[in-house]
Image (cartoon, rainbow, N blue to C red):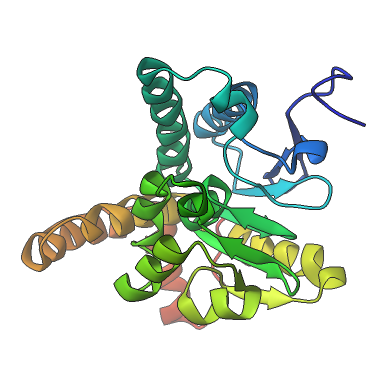
Length: 263
């Protein structure tokens, strides 16, 4: 079934009783390439998550044989104008930043290939679990197009030399190499992928949402500071976190040698 021709949505959304929302890229015939329509629907879904305090975790997955093959090159080639390309990459950048700015952790569930902006999406997620056969590349350079926007995310996940080698060669790396380089957190057999993602989500759901929201914001914010400013920001954030009822209860529970009651 081709979502582009059979009126299937380019992104599907499912929510379980824990508040785990799974957003599935749903263009399997196009390896879930990021068309303008898909970017628009994914942005809207992420915006809904951002305003829903009942959501605890977001999982981003792909339908079919791949996670995401990057931008839709056929769509891009059909409209060769600077204005169009600037708007397209700005649209994609907004979506990527929304992933990082969500108040809840986002897990990439990766199988098949994750290339170019698809690899960028993995890097922008807070956590990533990959099937053993998954492969990753920022391969635009093979087409004469350096993956500049993916380089922003990749250089913030991998060491500089590892990131630049991927960007300059366009070569694929394996899931195990992605794990060693810091692009993903876990590599598991394909049959265990959902179980591992679910277990990671479950551990996150057991923690206070407010602490994770404060912590995630601070984590990314301080990375862009110098170290002294980062410590100042972290100290202020931690003091605010300590005044939250969940932190006060957690510390008291530790003192009392009992499990915390976060209601």
